[in-house]
Image 1 (cartoon, rainbow, N blue to C red):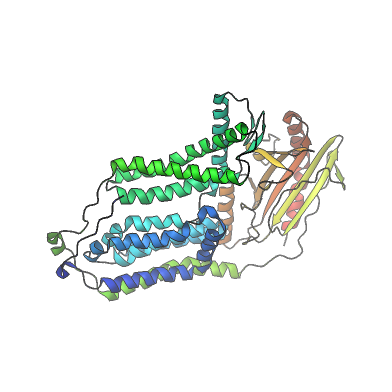
Image 2: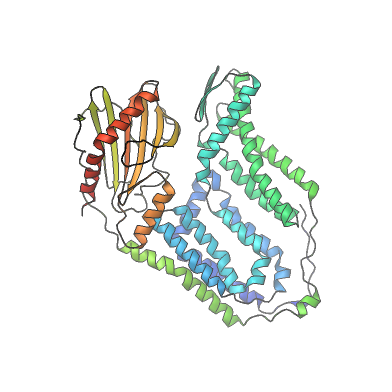
Length: 518
């Protein structure tokens, strides 16, 4: 990594007014963060409570330092407000509104952070923002995003580990992210997904590439390597932890030292990545424009125009926030909603004694009910959670709703997949989960219903919710879960769920319609 001190510029080459223009820009950025205080505060709260995103505290200071390093070049560039930036700000404000209406917090945070470079572009113009392109883009890494990758990373890590163990000659039985070796049972949980290593690697890799290389091609290639290497390295880490535990007769790599080995290994991998990347380093050249270019540079805009651009930037960005406040003011919280048990039909009978102690976890529903049905030897649990007015802390689609919590002492989720139940009616697709405990196995089907439409796609569900909310309509929705016990064969359990859906779907729909009536 190389850092070059830029030579001082003759006073005649510097554009007057830059300190004032910079102060106006900084004031506009701070104002945006304060206007969207709830979004800003939620971002900081995640930085505080999640070790995966703690690096967010460093992103803004690093970005400011990177801009400060280029102060000599910036001082030579004439600032000219770019009015096209207002269009981008309007689109980002609309994006924030859409995310807010759909309850997509990470979307709100991403739109807010993206507004900051857009505001800088509007106030200072294209030439200035291009000179700060990477520091401004680097701000996006402050957004705590990436949780959607966790299930995919878990599956990759489990498959990689199992394959490596098999190549070692060890017999392994795998079911989803769980696998069994002759010495014990293992599972890849969220903390083993490698997301923390991936985010840290990509953040450091981008910064290293920017400071070490001048060629954008090399920078992009190194950033890609900073994504691929930690994912593969996490697979090796998981494999080595299993091998250490096996070779030590299950005495090592099972407790706190499990985490220590992981971070030590990650540190070694990153050092190797930087060391190898250093062979292609490019020394930084002075970025100060030559005097002959400066002489023909366009004159800087009057500070009054810069201030006007800042005011308009704030006003345009504020439009989405104002509309969201108006929508939130119209919210009427429901009172005393109840879900009536679906009327038994086609031989199914309602039971009062539960056949299982398990039930799904949904946060803040306005009404919920778990019911149990029997038809001969067939048993079914039905759980419905109804959301009448979706809001923060009471959302139908959120990561806080789950079938089994991580590291549950009794239950394990052996894997989920989307399947078509083929019952000749809605829903056309459900999410199937296999739940296991020492005492019982459950086969679970679940889906969501929004505005009378069944879906298993969380992104589509959020889109529907946001659309209804923005248009001022009700955003009622329901989560429907059915489960049946099984011994060892899913082939016996699936027909039970299929038959129940075929027989009871009209009754379930009727129960939900009764709740949704005003």
